[in-house]
Length: 325
Image (cartoon, rainbow, N blue to C red; front, top):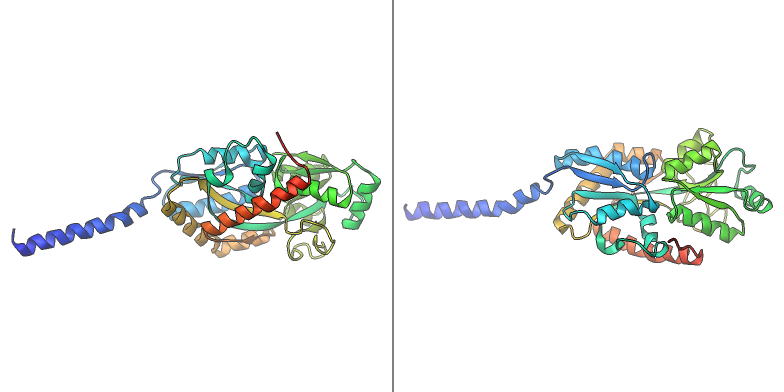
């Protein structure tokens, strides 16, 4: 072999070696990906997961399956992701606000929220809607408080599960207002909404994505909403701030997590694909129709948000004296 040919062969070998990392990067997903939704079908997280799954499948060239694992305010599903293989093939799409409560309200938690799960990115925020069954004689906050005080213990406030953020919000709200109502857990926000629609329970504080359709079609009566402004779909329903209610920034904060220890480059790839999906007009429009707004961001942004939420909502839970065994 001539010197020129030898040098050319070495150059080709070097070029091939340099290409290997990008090839490996392109092959990060070698089998189907699961998105675990730790609640029953039909709620906010489930709706989002089923919007995102086909888009993510197209992006990574693998099938993406949504799996519902309800129970224990989302902790059963979260635990399964925390203990999965740390390779980015198992994802959790959940209410991250509820997840942030878990270390405070569940002393026997079987996983560490901040160590065993790795944030991929936030997905959306949807305000809570405080609503009642039409049989409750209240059209606004003042009338609801007056009725609750005149009938202590008569109202039953449905929630998506014991220890969930809307459960703690209902307890803290009742304590602040000096009213007494029962809190009734269901397996997810959709089941809680249906329970109030049927009259089994009669009050709900739940994410707009799962609850708003029942209010707009008259099956529930909207009383107030959290967030900075009134919802376009409910222009006559006051905000918590306008009604001088506490916890005006409460709501359903949806995000994607994966197993702790997943390589950073895999997390970064997932985050990049998630950001592209959330930027799609059809996704943004669908989320807006449900009363929410997309909230993309980096894994570090989501990590910082989670740490702050664990601190702040932990204080709310401790003040409400909520501890679940």
